[in-house]
Image (tube, rainbow, N blue to C red; front, side, top):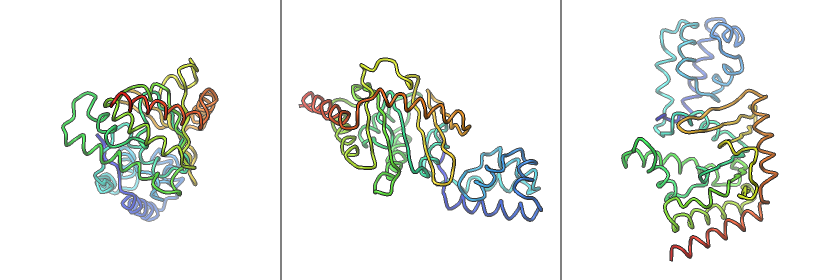
Length: 275
């Protein structure tokens, strides 16, 4: 389990890095060559936009002769919110994004999950979690969704496989509440929902979940996830391939209006079953 970081502490880390770099007489380019890090990555760290990894910090300490200072500084970035280790970097990008386009083949996207649905999801899996561990994860997941609370939040496109609607996580009452929740978000102008129906057959994203993110001052990224693993892709060619695959799958999906109608219909089925 990983800990999300504190943006204010990240800015302080960046200022300290810039001060130590300048004191050593290095430009960002010179430091990047010596530390075997890209100049862009160093610039983002100094601006407080990226959290350095432990390996990054070790390299900085070695090149700048700071005696382990940057490694020891890392724990101060933690703000106590827990996320899965493989999702740590993606969670940080999610908070900065201006546009998010996600595809989910199995579950409602985390940003759109209700508390009861999320609790059911987080209560499952292996190894088993204690109630305390589950609740810590639940708080983080619900906190993530706050980026959708106002009109200045990221534009979100949620592309859902029909299986997401049909898998009765927590039973019919939980699913009815969850699907109604998705519909309410879908009625907002900054949230679009599209369903890939079973009748679409094979499609370009059938292999798994992907989330595409765009930013004001950073290149777009792609995040792909599988069992107990996830990876952020920043290589432009890979990101473009993911974007094209998403566009192809979106072309096989129902329209926003048709998707909301289907979700309402499935929610009604669950409501009748729950009665």
